[in-house]
Image (tube, rainbow, N blue to C red; front, side):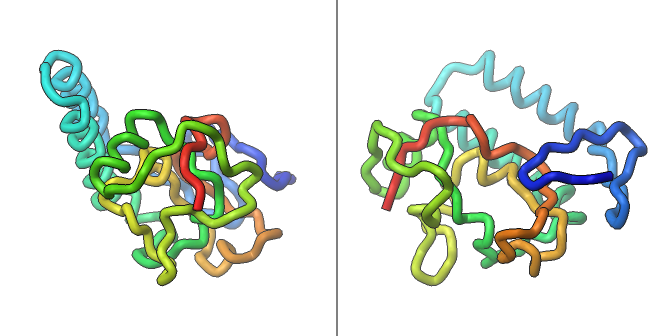
Length: 171
């Protein structure tokens, strides 16, 4: 299979890419838990930011229990944090309130030309507990050493970075 840079490949159940192991199917329990959480959040009144935190908590647990068993991502790796920050207005407000940073309304980063504005000098996420949905659902399947190679075809698992949310923050 000829894979073009930045292409999205959809695999059918049981289909594999040469040189890569087949991904495990997502256990049904996570779909059941997600449906229950969505029903709960849709029927409960209350603070929208608390609802966002509940969704984030589910994703963090899903990542820890399932996704981390087959992805290359490790604590302290910031290779993928060299792209524009995509987030919703809700997430921007949540980050601003939780981190005491100021949100901006206009797109100030484009073309993935700078590191994430939330990346610290040590190369760690300065808003890790408040990071947006896209960051929580972006994972790499290829060996970690490929992440720093700008010409490498890095296989991703999870959300696509294109056209999701608003570009709000810049250094």
